[in-house]
Every structure is written in structure tokens, then in C-alpha cells.
Image 1 (cartoon, rainbow, N blue to C red):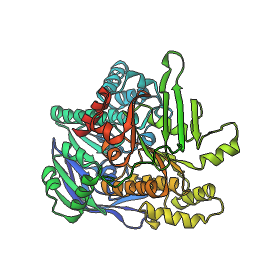
Image 2 (cartoon, one colour):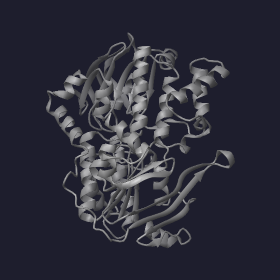
Image 3 (cartoon, rainbow, N blue to C red):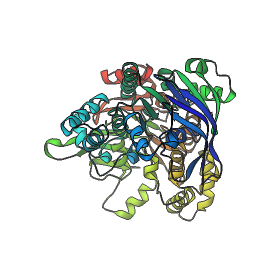
Image 4 (cartoon, rainbow, N blue to C red):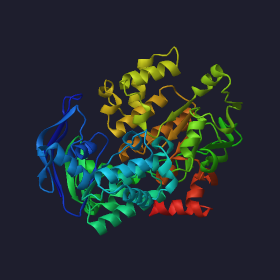
Length: 519
């Protein structure tokens, strides 16, 4: 179904090949996974297959054939037909891939009508079925993309691809923003489609558990080259190459980062961040929905408090309220016992400087017109007046394991993992007291995940940094958090010590989350 021989792709900004001498096949009805660290060329290969590389990139060598057709030789009309009926790409970033001016139902119906050539009534029915397939409520059809959580946006992207019933499905981190229960449902759906329709898949993922569950064969990339490939189970059980062994070890280590190494936070210490009766609703009249309803919690100095729950449970809404990006809430948010004061702009600005947010969608939060250096220097200059901004930038880049060679690049020239680390660096450059982390490592490969989590743990343990940590990955939460709050539809289901809750959840919903993650 897909044959890649000697592929080489170069970017003008780097002056070198992003991928070199890439060769592998995806047979009819087969699932092949691409794994490797951020920047290894995984997404570049997927975009080359559908001929959707950015203008700064070009294929300098090799051939790509889909069902025998060399894609680079196809006319514009044949290429459109290929993308419409035989091949579909689920991109990595939901927010930037969905038109912000069109409702979800319009996006789905347009694909069904213009691409699949269904009549309008049939297109509407197909759109409704596609939403059901990805476990989204029918009311989501009325929403715009920015009104959806990251996990919901991801499922809309999958629905847009599946509505075409392609022969070859390219999946670029398809479950990155999804919680354990929805992730399991989507993976089971993909396996069902693979079994019933004989659909071939090229799966890009940093989650080796997902790869083990889904893939027949595995291709390992490192610095733009194939270092190992073979049957997925055999490669992951007994990797032959040192780099693959490193990835497998890093994956196994996640969830055990703080095992026996973290002291309990001292009792009786006043909270640095206090949230009391937080409520936030969206919509009007009958369509009004409570994203958060009466939520209360405290975060102590040096404590890591995790918020977990399904996509759409209100986690990101809490993050936006705490950091002042959303002020239309009811309730009280206090820092060091003093209520955050929207009415006093100068005082609130001073308070807000000590609370920083790592956004779930890094590319959407980085100024596309500014270089990495400009983004970080501006943040340092604003957050720490009087300090050497370039010196702080260099120190922070080293903390998040980013090369100084990326300083001249703009966000669209970065891989997903590189953009995520720039977003983390921007949040850390001002030495905050409270760091709100909204899925901070979801786009990172396992080895970079481990180093970033160890950094956050070190800052919490030794520098007294408090973390409000939002994640769907219960392995990461178990390895990092002191306390956990489980949310569902904006309401607290249970809270307590992280290890106690995840070892023996007290609510039916908590048990379902944990069981899905274990499976």
C-alpha cells in the first residue's frame, strides 16, 4: 500500500537533511509504527507521503509510492483524488488544523459532501455517525474548535479522516491529548476499522504502550535515519540497537521517577495557591454547560497536585481561571492568602508574574512572528525586570535540553516536541512560585519526558516550586504527584494522596480511569 525508498527531505532553515535514506513499506491491511525522539523526522515523513510539506522543505531524493503510484509525479487533480478517497492524515495539533471560523458539523459535512460526494442529507447523517464513532456527544457539532478541549479537538480530527473511509490512514500522535478511557476507545475503534475494512495504517507515536497494542511492525528513527525495524513485539521485547534500548528503558522508567525519593510536604504550612468554590459555565439558556462546578483545593509550597479526568472534564478551564486568562468565573482564587484582584491591575500583574502556565497546545501559544530567542528574551525581560534576559534564556534552554541552534527558528519550524520544550522554557524563565502544567509532556518522546519530569520534580523538591499538574497519563501522575483530584464534568469525584487513590480508587469513575490506563 505504501512504499518509501531512499527518501531524503531537507529544510532551508537548517541547511541539512531532516530525514535521510528512509526506506520501509506498509503492506495492505498492515499497521506500521514510526517511533523516535522529537525532531527525528517522523512527522516530516507523514507530510511527505501526502505531499503537504511546508514551503521551506523539499524532497531531494528517493521515491514514495501509494498503491503503486509515485505521488510526486501525480497531477494536481490526481493528488486531490488520492487525498480524498485513498489516503488520509490525522495531524498532531488539533487547534491549528481545524478552521476556527467553522462549526464542527460544517467541517464534517463539507468533507462528506465535497470530498466523498454525498448529497447534503446523507452528508449530515455521515457527520453525525462520525462523531458517534469517536465518542463525541451530538452537541459538540454546534461548537467551534476553540470551544473544545484538546482531547475533543483530537477526536474531531480523527472523525474528519474516518468519514472518507481511506485505504491508508496516517496517524500523527492520534491519542496524545486523550485520557485513558477515551484513548482506549479510540484505539479499539481503529483496530476494529483495521479488522473490518482492511485499512492500512502508518502510526506515529511516542507512547510505546500504544505502539505495542496497535502495530504489526515497527520502524525506529534517530536523527533522521532508520536505526532498526522489525516485528513490533520482537523489537520492543529485545531491541538490537543501543538507541532502541534507550527508548524502551526510558518508557519503563516513567511512573517510577519519585519512587522512594520524595519526602511528604510538611503539614500545617499555609497554601501558596487556594481555590474556593470555583465555577465556570459556557453557553446560554438550554445550551448552558457547567465546565467547572464548585471546585475547591489548596496547593502547598513545593507540592505537586494533579488534576485528572476525561477530556472535557474542566481541567484546562481550571488552568485558565487560575492564571487569569479566563476571568468570567465565580468563586475565589488566592495567592499567599491574598485574593487575586482583577480590579487592581498593577497588584494583579505583580501576583500573576509568580504564576506561569505551560499550555496544552504549544504552537498555538507561541507568537508565530517571533524567533525562539525573541520569545524567551521577551519573557525574561517582562517577568524578571533588571535581570540579564539573555543569560536567563541560555540557562533555561539548558534545563529543558534544547540546542542553542534553535534560537533563530520560529515556532512553525520546530517539531511538536521542540515547541513543547520552548513553551516549558518560557514558563520557567521567570522562576515562578506556582507552575500550572496543562499536559506539559504529552507531545514529548519518552526520554525527553523523563528528563523534563525529573527537572520539574527537582524544582519542586529543592526550589519549593508548586505545581498544578494536569495530565491524562496516569503513569506520569503516579510518578510525580503528591495529591490527586479526579474531575468528571467539572465536579470532583474524589481526592487524596496520589498513590492511595490510584492504587484503590473509591469511586466507580476513578476505577474506570485506572483500569483503562492499566489495560
